[in-house]
Image 1 (tube, rainbow, N blue to C red):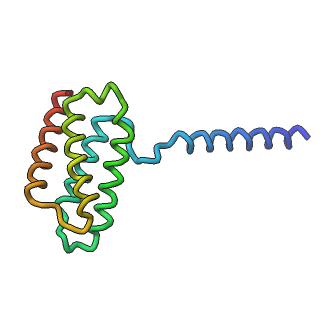
Image 2: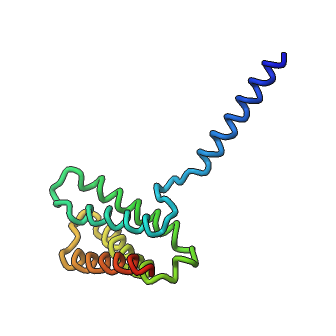
Image 3: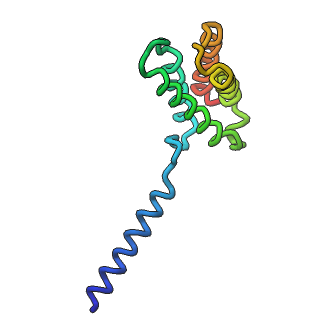
Length: 133
């Protein structure tokens, strides 16, 4: 009788822990570390921009880029500690530009002029992150 109650309590505790850990996991694949997340999003977007138009992975990479843009904005847009950083405002400008292109022209390649501007903004973001801003 005692062992049966012991095992049922142990099983209940294990289930609570598993459900708790799954509930605390981040569904957006961002870590919560602003600097690391920003660099990850920049790298994902660079990969999406550098991929040739005729690449078979183009649609999947663009979908991943859109997801990263949305996840990043959702996580950090209302974070007052991050919203005032120079790196965040520059990053937000870049994200809005690329998201706008993807929304307005989903089947067209990103123009070189926009790619060049985004690369400049990504470099500014990386420099600001190195400075801690």
